[in-house]
Figure: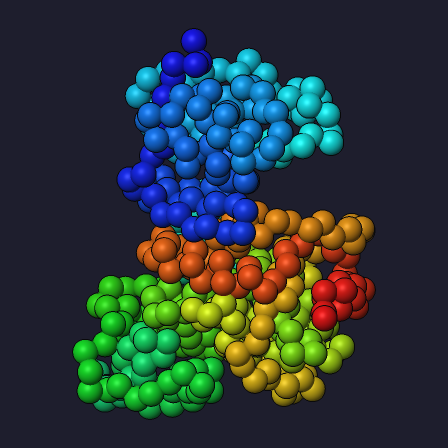
Length: 159
Length: 269
């Protein structure tokens, strides 16, 4: 089944930044940032809507010089799909295996890095990082609070 | 009651700001403090159309801060209010700076190499900065790491907002010279980015992060990330060309400062 799937990477609404062997992706719509390791970024780049899972696996084997199981590629798809970096049209194959299980199966000395997509939601509230008491702190005046808002209460607290 | 309007303006990091006050004393104080802070990156701009207009207006028993005509906060006319107003003026510059990216962090230079300690308010970074200064580091900032488009650190030497102990919510502003420290000459090469926070009884156990993971964590503290994601990512990538990233809980800052310097020195060539 997976041999015929041709996943397509999302190219709109994102900003990318190449690093040495990682890729940073900022999602303009969700304001989430993602770091793709070398394996995940290779898979993502090769998701062009034309390459099948098998095509990507073959390319990756050629690049690394190592035999690569289809599960590794599909695990990358799962992570990329869950972070909305792969378009949702069509089915994304399920590897049926967790990253931990795959690591155990491949051994800790796996020749290729298992795919990893790390994500972070960028805070919307810049005031959270300002000097001044953080949200929830007791206050007597708005200027004590980084938000500038001291909510009346018993006792008053910073918004 | 009529008050005379005092206005001054400046442009710093490409952001033009006008400040209007109804008290000559307030105007002078803000102007002096902001001039000192932005002296390496400031020029008068009272004549141009500013990006931001701040106004401090007095009523019978309170003062109010307005930004571009919108009310921000009101309070008693005291030092705390003026500190708040300054913070918001600095924030306007930090969020909209041109060709520079502001990251909420403490920053020092040791042997000419930058140590960046990202963190939210109350994470203990100013306390750690203070102890690093006592060990011979030079001061860049306890509020913002300012990264230029070449990935280098530019000083932003506001007075340190010192808490008497790591759990105290009250702060006093202390000039670095009064603490026996000196301000670094910029730009400075960033060498160590350390994600750390005070955790009583915690063991110092720094774990190295990849460049990508380090920059990802930095984005949480990067002020213009939503407004300027492309600039933010590009500049922080340049920073990552020179810096290593670590994370660790730390015990009291007095015991941590030497460990931080030792960690930096393992990466000095």
